[in-house]
Every structure is written in C-alpha cells, then in structure tokens.
Length: 105
Image 1 (cartoon, rainbow, N blue to C red):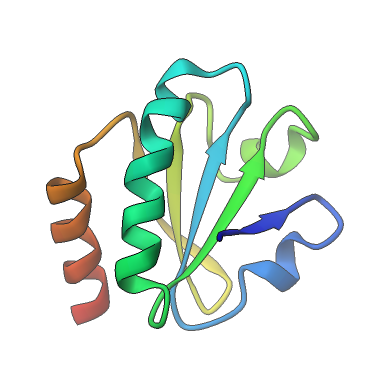
Image 2 (image 1 turned 90 degrees about the horizontal axis):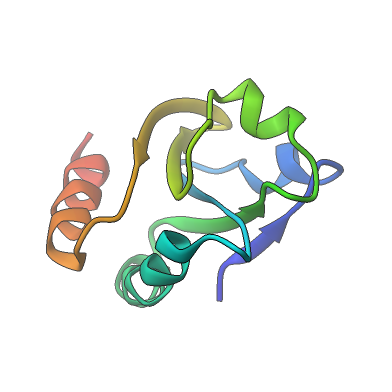
C-alpha cells in the first residue's frame, strides 16, 4: 500500500532514488478510476519505486509548489527533487511503459 504523505512528512516521504507521488482527492472521480491502476503498478514496481499518496484537500501549498493544478497528477521525484509530472487518467499499459522508462534513466 502506498505511503500517505502530509505537509509535515512530505520531504521525508519523497527521499529515495525514485518516488512517484499521486496527488488526489476523495471527491475526484478520475482519481478513483486511477486507484486500481496505481495499486497494480505498486504491486509490480514496489520493490524499485516508492509510491506515495498526497490528498490535496489536506493542504494546498505542496501541490502548488509542484504546479499540481489538476488531479489526478503523478509527480516523479529523483532523490527528493521533482523531475516530471503526468496529469490525467491513463491505462495500466501506458503508465507501465512510462515507469519502465523512468527506471531505465
């Protein structure tokens, strides 16, 4: 299961070689659509990629810092630094390919 982040522990949670932060909200329909996809990806890559969830309703400063204005958004962090952002709903195959490319970098 993905680690839950909040404003107090965010920097700690994004440390590591490769972390994917899923910015979401409980009322967001597309976010609910992405939940099973993210769970599948975490099962496949959980030993190589850290998966973190951040509920944007809890605090907006961090999402704004990473220019998350729409959800669902996935932000890729390498060694605690935000590198890329993907916004919207994607099928498993497309995100699977994307994560394979991230691991190859």
